[in-house]
Length: 95
Image 1 (cartoon, rainbow, N blue to C red):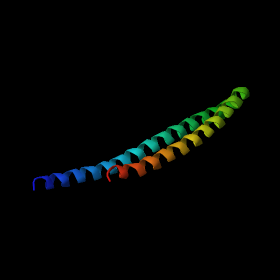
Image 2: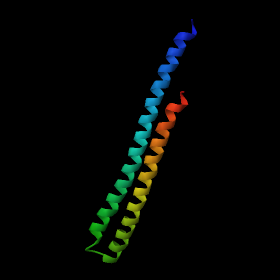
Image 3: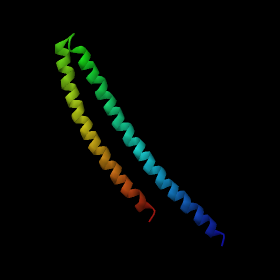
């Protein structure tokens, strides 16, 4: 009879843990994508400002911006894959 209240407590803690894990994954995904977008915005602004001053540096900045955009797309795909994979694995731990 004494084990029964402890089982209810551990079940509640496991349920809360599942929600916190999903929330932490969402925060991680959002932070990684936001960091990439901010970097693209900063380099894009630099390219816009440098165009009238130094066209050669602007061309280099534009090429690096394009490559960074490709990297950002790859990171977004990997982050989404990891998010879905971990989100599907977490409930299986409690079965």
